[in-house]
Image (cartoon, rainbow, N blue to C red; front, side, top):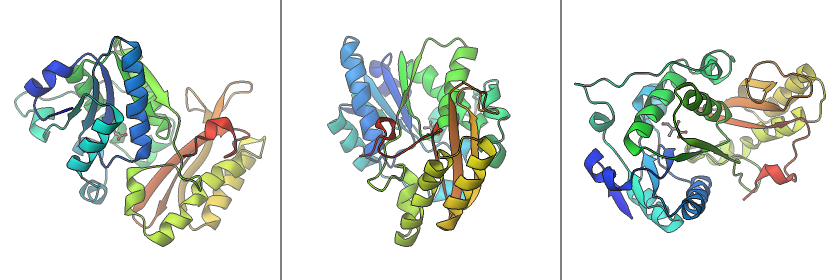
Length: 285
Ligand code: PAF
């Protein structure tokens, strides 16, 4: 397995499956790499590229950017073991050359109006779409895999690829959870032991929301449950699974949540109603 820092070093590994990450990889990421390896083997052994780049343009809080965990050597070893062909770890000037500014693509509706992450993290999705379009231009993937934990992000990437007519198969991978149900996230590393215990409040909020057939009741009960564990909730909302607008009868819906423990912001989501950690789509480790 190669580590490419430049566009020239990346060149022999283009045209395969791309897993965009910001590093500090956890077992959930590595399952995405394994899924990519399987996909690649079924598609004539195309390359599997994991990008590791902490993208400055998608952070709306300097502290979050500064404290984002970084450990490239460890990440590269883990990617090699999981079947990656190449880790692409570019510098900021490689990604954003000052003499050739990288545009922000036109934002899809799911990035700008559902009043979820878009509302609480202004500028986040313009940065995500910008960096992903740049990664797609450089890596030229035929497929890309994103975790479903960032449901709105996955929806944005799907919509952006459709809008720009990019020939990329965008694959969502189910959220991987710790044994207590907490969604795996690089940010979990920044929780204290006490906060890590409280973090279970978010997934318990999603489960509680799934017990109520009326969206408003579900949101109230889900939020109360999460807050009873000490999580400061930003939102817990039942939405149409595709548009992320108000749910429609007989269309798939999702409950999406974001909350804070100290300075750490966590997000999660689940099918709605009737989400339980015993269900096959709960994906516990
Ligand atoms: O989900 C992430 O880790 C990031 O938002 C992504 C997709 C790698 C873009 O920087």
